[in-house]
Length: 319
Image 1 (cartoon, rainbow, N blue to C red):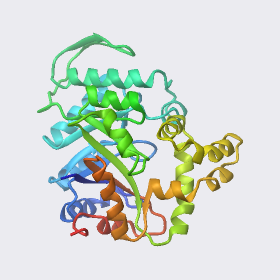
Image 2 (cartoon, rainbow, N blue to C red):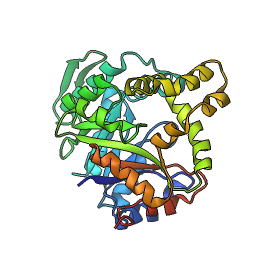
Image 3 (cartoon, rainbow, N blue to C red):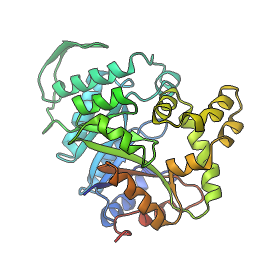
């Protein structure tokens, strides 16, 4: 049976006031809480709070960029979270994007595949508590040993889009984290990872019968993501290039309004789960049927009550 997760923290609510939300996730039947790290909260503090507020939940990062922390600091962060929530923390790492790494963090987005691979290899060694003195392809670590050895090495999941990263996730990770894809796309993605691996999918949801509003806001969200080079290449590989060409052309011409308007309804309906709650739950179920083992729902607040949406999409609501 698939695990049911929710993306945290929730927008529009101060972090220190979210304890009742986290406690209710358990009552609603959710098994997991997954954080992210872009321009909002960091990935670890919301999980640390949730570890205390809702000790029944498994916690995960989806994702931490491989570039924005040095190797030793990243090992310390992962080890600390593992110690705070022993046996119920999974660490998700990925390349992130040139926007986050270069534009926002002033770090060169060089050799992202290799950097992610090397960080996974380093963490595998460092989290055992052994001394690491090794040269990796993209960095070298000299004489580092964790001062507090975690109780175990947590599962390490790799955020992946195209075949190279998906295969890395299966070969050197414990599974893959996937994002911005349709339920049908999962069939193309999962075989690249391989059998027996966890597949975590962040699924964007807006349980609302107002399709016009969802599609309007959804086009803006999709345009913002799918013009980032890594996501554009991903959707080319998935075969969505012809549907998105007009959007990409308008974006390159500097007309973002036209770019968003050029996204077909079909693409929005494939990438964003929307409609009445029961229809949304059925749509989410198709991701699971096609190979997702853990859902990490992300509520899009397009004219809806976010907390009610969390309830409406929960395992408890589905009976």
